[in-house]
Image (cartoon, rainbow, N blue to C red; front, side, top):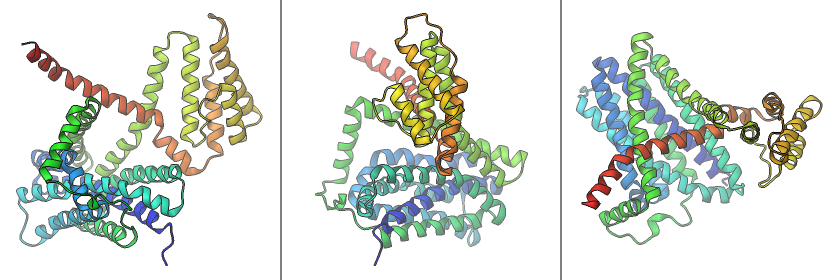
Length: 415
């Protein structure tokens, strides 16, 4: 008899394999093209056909998931990726592969990636309920697994290509997608309310409904534009890194390591930049203390110690002291931080306030010392402040990209 938590664990593993497999393919395929053709232009063209399906899936992916059902869509997506990826080394070893054939296979392999991820996300609530696990805990584990899979996928792809060759790495990658599909097929039950059970309209009618929904809601339209723009900006990066790694190091492992390292440090660096900017923009000492306090609370929250909503600084301080077993110098640092924050909020304007930065750092280090290794790793690599900063920057880029179009529309409207 299957354990109640087996479907949840199977979905975790399937998610990990699928996401890591995508990252491996994004290393192995550009490197294969670059080393076989020597052309950065052709490599860029292949990468374009890897990103184009992401744009298309933003429009029709939901309709595909509705048609196939959550479980079936996840399985079909992994099977499509497996066939497309494995066909590249198969053709290379038999009749040879033309560049246009490679582009078609890359396009097909990436076409259902987004719908497959959407389908697995839709299956998640049911398997969490079946496992009798709190949704907050299960979602946190899933987010950590997903980020970890994306981080290790690129270095793993580089090591596979360097150790076994690009074609062998693609064979292994294709087989991994089969394992992911098999896990969902064998262990994940159909959703209680699968989308495929709903009454279906015509495909293009449903697609048009979805497009109208996006266009008529400015916020949703802005989010879609932001995602498209960020993917457009991100796409050339893998080509540039591939060419750089080949010319400077000559190794696919270095290519994968470069991609992995850049992905690893991007969010922590964004968190640092956000804190520096907020401190620079603080108009006085009271606001600076408030920024330092919020940063400390958020960093402790990244470690899994989250004060109850609406807590005063004193209540939050008592909570942190109790949960992290702070005593001695660390406890004194926390008291000084709390006292300074209260003074900044309630004392008359112009009151002298001490710098709490060192005390705040000491408190965060003390909390980190009593947390589990995975909590410390998540806080190091995926600080919430960094994620917020990236979202803000993408939103700002989206707004700048929309301004010419909105100005044109306003001008046409006046005419």
